[in-house]
Image 1 (tube, rainbow, N blue to C red):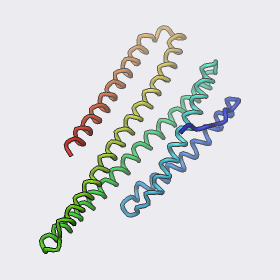
Image 2 (cartoon, rainbow, N blue to C red; image 1 turned 180 degrees about the horizontal axis):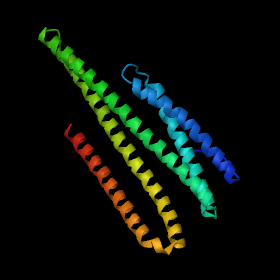
Image 3 (cartoon, rainbow, N blue to C red; image 1 turned 60 degrees about the vertical axis):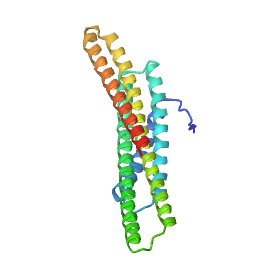
Image 4 (spheres, helix red, strand yellow; image 1 turned 90 degrees about the horizontal axis):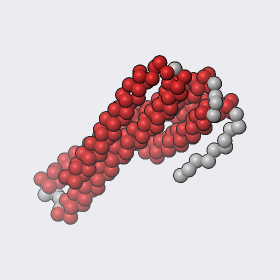
Length: 228
């Protein structure tokens, strides 16, 4: 779903909007940290989903504002304006990476709780069978419930892989913006062209390695799902 935002008419308006979104994200991230830390003692999945969707919406809006600021700088902004943009991009990257980390931690806790439930259910089923209280129909129902839960866990793992891939794509876009700025610097200072070229090659190699890791993780998840 696309997010409609009013386009500010000046650099100061863009900065004000970026700071406002960053403050809202700080507040939402604090709530999300508390939710992740208390997961296990509480089971309010609806609240967790609402916080996640709210953070994702704010991150998308902040990304749009940063893109508008980037366009402003590219049209001839000063060095001070460029430095301000870099700071806002770093804040966005830090918030995005922390959000992915917290969400992965939350998913892991949910899977752990689900596995504990499976073990308890297995013990109850075993005791019923040993006492002669279990029936073939009850056993089949329990088996079906266990399979459904395992399928949900596989879906959660795939979701985490997709989130990781999203983080890699975001980092790739960030590296692209950095490379553009480096090109501008190199045009002004030809003497550092060789150093900047080495930095670009290093970043390209990092991007390739991250993409390879994401592909391997996705492949292993697919193999795991096939063997279930």
